[in-house]
Length: 123
Image 1 (cartoon, one colour):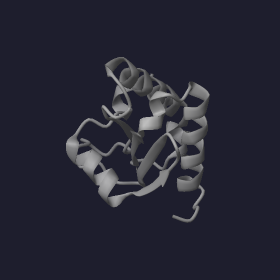
Image 2: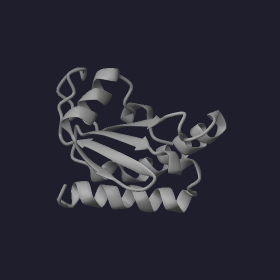
Image 3: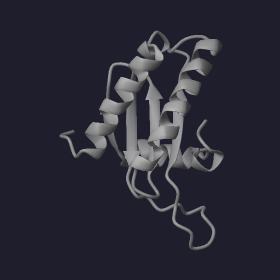
Image 4: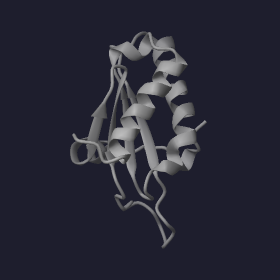
């Protein structure tokens, strides 16, 4: 699972990533990235952590399906969180097709979106 300190929890942080960040879409999900944003909530002078959040609406499916999708996305982001610059805010928004996608398909879509965002691909 994604460590608690790497989870987005505040509404303002989600809004910042979605409104001011770059995005890359795939058939099952959309990834929003706000690179190197400083964390105004962080105490002290420690290096800001990259934080990720997930948005899975009812359009994806029922509660069981939504929770399954969130668990899969958290698991996938755990291995990829170190790819981002320190202090980045990442929001992964699941699209309705994510409920029918298997773990491998979600991983492919997430990797393709991250490659586009981190590799400097055209928007």
